[in-house]
Image (tube, rainbow, N blue to C red):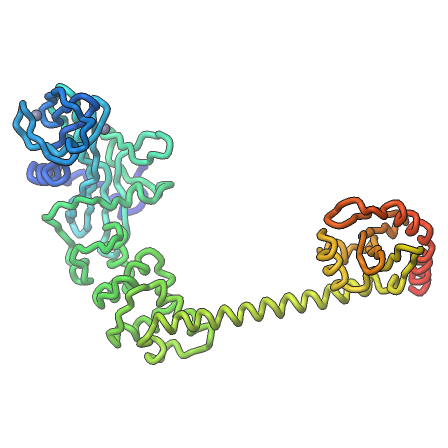
Length: 434
Ligand SMILES: [Zn+2]
Ligand SMILES: [Zn+2]
């Protein structure tokens, strides 16, 4: 992409003038990244350093443990299993440099391609540069990549180093190499802000940019509050929210070992209305215990709130339910065996659901305006649940225990059908009253 901002224009112009990787830098990478390797196939071993291949029975486990010497080139080889006739190893390798006020992180891919019968081909190619201004603004200059499934970093080394936009995978230009050239150069602003090269498990681009752009990151780094620093680099808002408390921590030399626990704890203090600027709370001598105590306390309060909310909703439902169904309360009809009665509270719906092992206890039943639910009882046993339509005056469902067919099915049908007038009359009188 064409550079758009002044910063991008300056970075790309300076990038063109950067010297290529020196022989010394290249050799350091190769020496530290790659080991001299021999490859074990089933019945042969081959040397990655000269390509020589010889017969050997590699079913024996001991062959993979001991280093061997290549009978052809005499090099000491670490052994690894590989059934193929070639083997490629690739690693990121980074160099910290500076140019005209910019901090520059140059990322290379070092690759070693071994194959049977050949000397290895070793390459060190540049793929990405992070240009970081003294204010911590970053310009990414990189090569193009090949599209291939999930792999986002198949660099095309013949493509130009160009200013690139925000990638879909952040790690694409945010490279955290395992190997960094020891001759590290830093701009004075980084040194002034306390940065000495330690990364603390964060990528160099992220930590350098944060230390330059965010005074909180600078303060945390200088105070040695590394756990909070890491949080600050990745989630600056989490730190900004409690910055006054964290400053008290720093002033009191109170080391925060685990930022997550500590920030949770500050959240609890806030929840309970405690003074977030009082060192007694903010620098608690037994943080872990206090964290757990407040966490449990908050949990109990929230649980109680949820219960109260539930109860409130239940009472509201009960009101709605009464408004819909009270006109039918008291309806009972029976023959010699069965007695059918209207359910008169939500509690009765819930109990009916439990007794009969079906779902009549759910609100879709008790708050349904056009139906009436009744239970059929034989002796002292609930034998069926009936849903009756107030529109068509017919039974919609008649369910025995666990949605089975009641053994009194036909008898109940008949009993209900004989007594629909009772229901009809209540509906009519309430309509007239309204
Ligand atoms: Zn060899
Ligand atoms: Zn392999």
